[in-house]
Amino acid sequence: LRLSIPLNLLYVIEKVAEHLDCSPTSREVAEYFDQHDKLRHLRQEFLFPKVAELPPSDLSLVNGSEECIYFVGNSLGLQPKNVKKYIDEEIEKWAKTGAHGHTMGSQPWAWAENNLEDLMAKLVGAKAEEVALMNGLTVNLHLLMLAFYQPTAKRHKILLEDKAFPSDHYAVESQIRLRGFDPSTSMLLLKPREGEDTLRTEDIVSTIEREGHSIAVVMLSGVQYYTGQLFNMEAITKAGQAQGCYVGFDCAHAVGNAELRLHDWGVDFACWCTYKYVNSGAGGLAGAFVHEKHADTVKPALLGWWGHKLSTRFQMTNEMDLQPGVNGYRLSNQPVLLVCPLQASLEIFNQTSMKDLRKKSILLTGYLEYLIKHYYSRDESEPHKPYVHIITPSNPAERGCQLSLSFSLPIRAIFKELEKRGVLLFETKCIVRIRLNQTNTISVLKC
Image 1 (cartoon, rainbow, N blue to C red):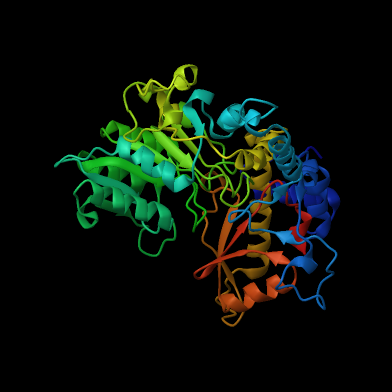
Image 2: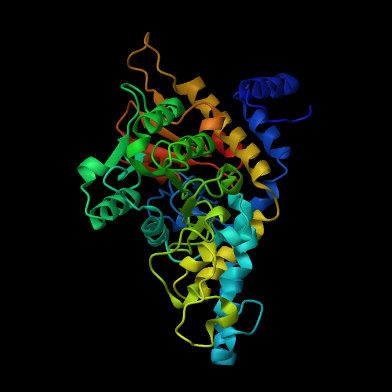
């Protein structure tokens, strides 16, 4: 049976089960998918914590020598195996060459991050000159907002989703206050309809069309961290720009997760971290994007030495020769020890494509959704039966590789029992967020 991943996942699952002459929920189906997974080798590129090394594990319930089940890459990605090697090389270079390391070796420290921008640009669907690796996400968001958010008496609002990630919410609030406006009137929050968990694209677009004359910047997530909803970035960008708004995205939960085409969609600016889906380690180097159409028109408000063109940077004239586009937003030399983990991870991504990664994530989330609905759907005829509610949209085009779940039973009890068994999950308020990607097998969903 030739395996393909159309949007109708139910059809795929049932056809595989029919081919194997077994139930769609049987382990044989999961193992079949694993055997036909052309990305299964990527799992070997990462280090998995052992169950015994995780404090919550109960070794009376699980084998401590086994690898944990890692569903928490939306908090911190796994460590690529080459990270230690690359860091050790730079530490050794420092010991042996001192300041010569700035310009020597495979990763000269003075421009080490520049060597990775082609690889990062592939992940976000951009040109290399539209991407800069620097700082942390919130720092980059502030730098970009200082340039793109130019409020006037009539056009001063920033549109973002309600319950945005706190760092985005705080950044937007502070940008509004910095310009002398009041967040209570200049911060426009998008909320789902009554009784719904996620936003409808038509409601986002209609809000932009209705309020666009007063909106300076549309600033949304690419993937909403809490619900796992993948926003229609192309439609939102088109709607915002039609009203004269700049449109930017926080792609922290989208990069390395969903197929992005920031350049083709005409997105004005974007930023993201890399320690989640891109596996660069805690506090890893973040990314920023400015579309090439703004390369010579939207200038950074704050300047640093690294925004100066490299060809004349070391002439020390103190006369700024600004790099065009996003490179002009650079402030300083980036830490090479943060470049190393990112290099190790991006090299793994370069072994495949976001298209193929996306196919696998659609299958993973689709099969998990199938199992949850099969075993734990709400049944009005059995009011005492435990059930699981999936907050994340069911349409694969409207989600990434995360499913956000709420439970009829106390969530802390469920969370603790899973942790005892070597399952790493992320609990946020009243939900559990499960992230599935190239390091996960289908079979693990049947455990």
